[in-house]
Amino acid sequence: IAGVPFFSGFFSKDKILAQVLQRATENAAFWPLVVFGFTAAAMTAFYMFRLLYLTFFGEPRDEEKYRHAHESPPVMLIALVVLALLSSPLVYPLIQQFELRVPEMESMVVLAGNEGYALPAEGHASVEANAAESSHAVAPGEHTGQEEHSVTHTLAMVLSIAVAGLGILLATMFYYWKIFSPQRMSERFSGIYRLLLNKYYFDELYDITFVRSTLALGRFAGRFDLGVIDRIVNLVGSFGRLAGTVSGWFDLIAVDGLVNLVGSTTRSSGARLRKLQTGMLQDYLLYIFGGVLLLIVIFRILL
Image (cartoon, rainbow, N blue to C red; front, side):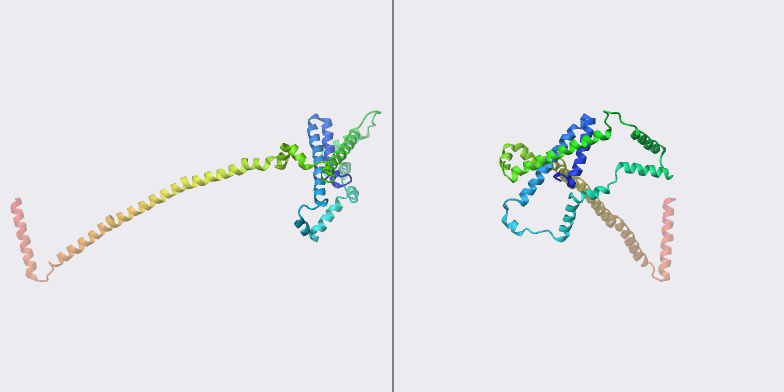
């Protein structure tokens, strides 16, 4: 991905930069994207060769880790070799032969329409219009859109190679030839160095905006659950327990007491009335005579 010519990273990056440059020539609003794209290409080449020099050149910074370093297992090594071959300049021309281009797709559409497949009417019109436009002769001195695109693509390729070479050269001067000291540069441009070292403080910003706010919301929800929800639940439970206790007391004292009072009254009354049942005829005649006498007295008093 350093953008070295003839490798796959160069071709993919070259196409992207060419398209952005082409749009910028048509609309000036795209020029900042051109600057960003070529700057990123230079930075990519720089840090990839920095990685190369720090990993495979010079003395090991940690002798213990260097002694324990070993090759990857075959399951990884074979995959890496295959990927390296697919990105090499030897394989890319073979892959390019199988690439499906836009003119070939247009010809397939035309053939499909001639074969009687479903093709919209506007599709026929656009294909015929394109064919008619391509059949017109170009006047001397005129440039077709394809020629302009080819010029823009060539310019983008040259600039891509130049900025990639600049990035590789700077990495070589810093980390291989050691003409410049990264330590001194980091001290001289300490603000930019800290900004890049801390990854534009994205982690800190993410921590403030999302992590801390989420934790604060969680703490608030926990306190609300303990201080409000749980208290309401406990209050309802206490009220239910109190209502159950009062209901138990009322059942034991009032309901059970009344039932027991009726039962005991009936039992005691029955016990007293049972004594009147002696089974002797003279006792019963005495009770009758006493009752008649009591009635006579009552009537005499009332009348």
